[in-house]
Length: 528
Ligand code: F6P
Image (cartoon, rainbow, N blue to C red):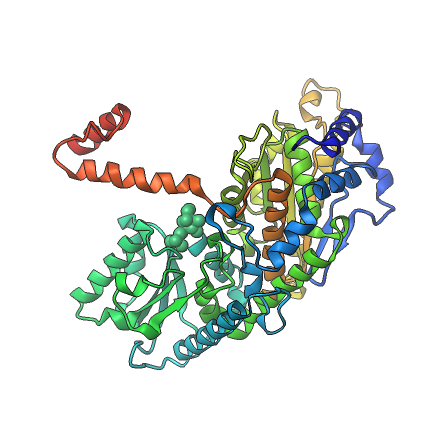
């Protein structure tokens, strides 16, 4: 029974406090540290939330009533937590395999150690510009081919950690689209003779990826370049090498129990290691491992991912918030919102619960965001004076590598975060007399979390991303849904190939295609 006593207590509590004017409540709150949590890398200030001293304990009781503690143990011990695919979710095993927090599955840990050695070996070969039997030498560009979880994580991390790029390392480019505009953009940036393609696909059945690979293989062949020495394959599909012919030593596998959107820590992250070096890649993993320990060992109300999940649940299911904004106030994290779109919405965009019942309550919000202060000059008007309820994370970086040389710019960014947060929660009462004074007033009582990264490093980024992974999974527990499958996107792939076949055939397959699509196909086919 989803709507249990713990839920009903939350409902009654919401009725009571939803009328509060939080301005005064929160002002009194600033003397306590009850709304601050931190670990070695992150400082979470959740004091600007529409909660009182009862709210989180009531949310915790509901979470516990959904067997969260056992669920969390099951994840960390490799039990089946993805029932529809009959799989465990073993991404935690990828971090810090030397003294893993992940229990059980010795073979898995040994395989992960072997793959890490392979990642290190390939990273060194590329950095040393060595030609081998199976790999071209003097590589100047890496082209990472992947989509979704096989793209977004590595793309974010490589972009965010440019300051940690190894000087001798090749530039890493990413391509996920079959759009010829993008294919040619990449082609025009590289010399194929000194380019290494890393083709990443967990299933090795994603049509876009195979199409992109074939484009570059064909182009390499036209230039009489042995494409086999310019391709590495990364997949959970042991048959990958049968789909794209290459040397066996150019294939890296990862466990099928690693979800795509949780996979950057595996061989999927090879391009990360090549860009920032294997040691920094290990630091990324270690930062994530630090958060794994925090998530497993801390009680719910001293647990950053859990607090973020409880608050998102509170707004989604009691304030009917359908929009979650993430604004990183550092351009290093400009791709974070896109990464979180997939992580949260592909994990929790569901309406069947773990038992196959139709859900009658809200699940994931729409995730969106852009960097600060761009967001303030774009959509923050709607957050301050709009008709919708938004919940929000503002992410700040306290000490960038160049902080001392650029203190004034970083101070401006930091002050901007506090200013936006202050306006959201306390609002603004205009006391000017002219007619517009009403338009200048801001109600406030809009919540936000402040997430401060203490010092920028591969480890702090790993810590942040792992925090969001665990938050996403804790939300799945609160909503009693499977955060690890994604059946909704499988359908689109099938209908696309049907429609594509009809477009390419002379006759319009009216039996296969709905009349609306048929009309568009005619437009597409016969446009002059
Ligand atoms: O969007 C569906 C999906 O399967 C994602 O879950 C996955 O990350 C992406 O497509 C790419 O899949 P693959 O890594 O198998 O190419």
